[in-house]
Length: 289
Image 1 (cartoon, one colour):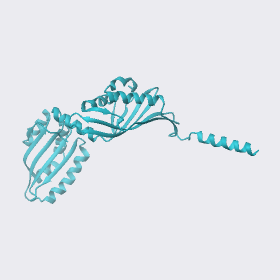
Image 2 (cartoon, rainbow, N blue to C red):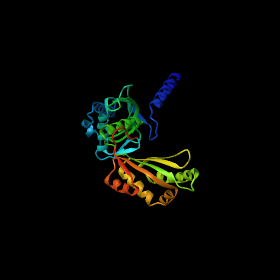
Image 3 (cartoon, rainbow, N blue to C red):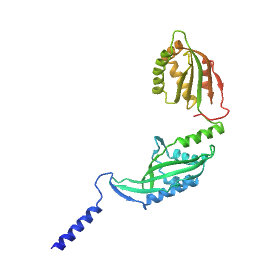
Image 4 (cartoon, rainbow, N blue to C red):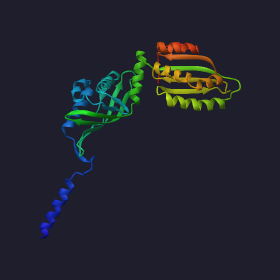
């Protein structure tokens, strides 16, 4: 009898250990699944610079493809993957080994998940770059219908800017100006105005990515440095400024001494620049952050 009870307890323990928890995000891991093999092939083709060869593996109908917070469609994903080889030589996905598995969850979804160190040598900076990457792909009927890539993009962005500079194709534009602080106004008045104005710009101009004002030691002169992703963003800033009450405050507080618009100015921006007496200067070298 004791022997029977013992056997029953052993079977109960074994059965309990093999049970999968019941939650939707519980499931079974498998590092030899078909999804893992497809992910390996995708990573191999990417590393070789032949990412277009696995285009059929990616669903045409889904738009749930992300690089950090940037959502792209299938074409955008393929273009980004190929674009990396325009910027880097010797791209490797496994310089420190790849951790790759798949999960079949209780809610029916199937994901592959990879953690690895990406590496490459910049074609323009010559830098040896290493980036920790995690990506997850969701599969349906042997196709990827969702993809999430997580990594620090700063080193890739740096190489992209070096490429744009070398080829003189950067679309970024700078606004540079020297201002005189008008009589009757102090540096405290300038600071108080810029606190409000800067918040206005931050809240209403997503294409303005740098916005700095710098004052002289005597508080009578101010330099501004403004940066825009494109000429259209600069035009939006000027329209935004001119249609707001801040333009009136600005012109009471400051007198324009010199204005320079630097970079790839569109015809529309050139036309707007005339009202400010701006000098136009195209890029000749270096890079724009």
